[in-house]
Image (cartoon, rainbow, N blue to C red; front, side):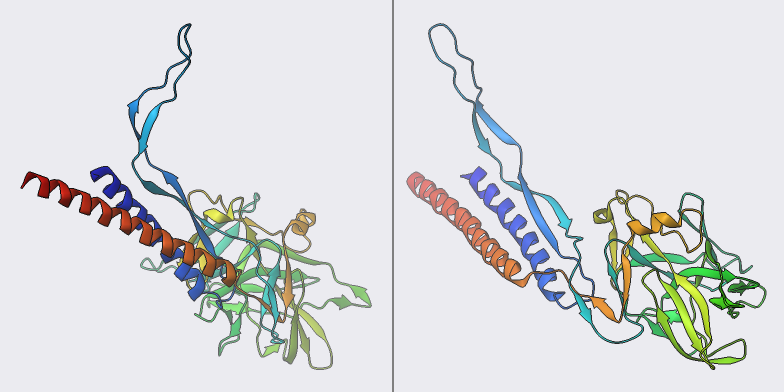
Length: 340
């Protein structure tokens, strides 16, 4: 009876964890880019009452006699499948159609974030303040971007959207580390009737859509599938501002969620690999990443019908495990009464 009661306790604990996960899935069914989770279980070690034996001349074989000791949590797997894309019509809303994550940062604009030749990110503090830290880098599929009062491209929580600086012709978008300001020069897409060869990569910078570029007011902007941001200036002139950076992971299920729709690399996720910038030597590898769909947001991939069904199953399993405990208690009470 004691073993059955402990098995019932382990079952109640396991089903409670499952209900916790289901409850979180249902609560976030309307959260932008939320990824649902599922729980799997495994049995614990078994008590062997009798060992199995092979067949002999006089007798046939027998199977082992074992009693299970309950259930244990095996894993909480994240479903990284893509959610549906919901059109919003807002020019700063962006959804990723395919694999990949946006890169966001928290820190000073002068904190240099470099990209190595193998596509890995390195953040270092360059502002000269000994008490300051390097920029904290996070990853998200939530493309609900905003502009602050300075034109910085940020998340709803104020984290900076990271991207590549663009150079083309004699112009380049860069950071003036002495003044701590982002310098956005006019990088035309055409010059003298010819298309300008654009180059991006080598360093990540916080992106900004300023009010003016080269003394001309910005009247509008577009974000293309490869993340290239183009601003329309007065006189219908078009200038390239930068390119939104994206990263991928070998095992994105190993990412650790930190809240606010953001993730950090985990021990089993692998290091982030950056999407090559426009004009780089390995630009062809960018085809392996998803496309940025402007004017849309990725919704949660929670299936409420499945979650409600799993919730009923978990609830009934919890009740059954509690019944095992009460039944074991009744039998123990009967044994005590026999002694009396």
